[in-house]
Length: 164
Image (cartoon, rainbow, N blue to C red):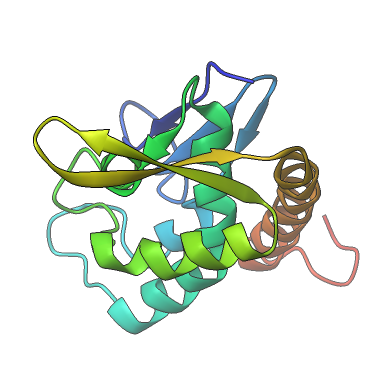
């Protein structure tokens, strides 16, 4: 699997809640759709950092699996963290150290595999790649995310109780 990219811009006429997409081959994951209602990068907006953290905490495993699935080769933690950086100062920020415990947990669950390789410029690095089990879980989580996002969007748009 390859060809995915992380897009984090709010250009042209996109809605304010659509500030970023994780694009997988043949599908789009609206990773920051929920987060967009908290902060869309418009000067004067305020941020609810606790809410952002809570949302991201629930999505970090999905995000990490998607990044490793989209990579053509194994990646070490810093490379993964770089893929998660937003293009603007206003984008969601994740500290690099927050991903390592999640990577280790996903490795223990068999969703990722790692290999330690020597580095030319420092200590050895642990490279991660997604497993077959991880790809199956990513597909399942992507479907769950898409259903959750659709449901949330309907509620935020006031389309409840079957009204459209």
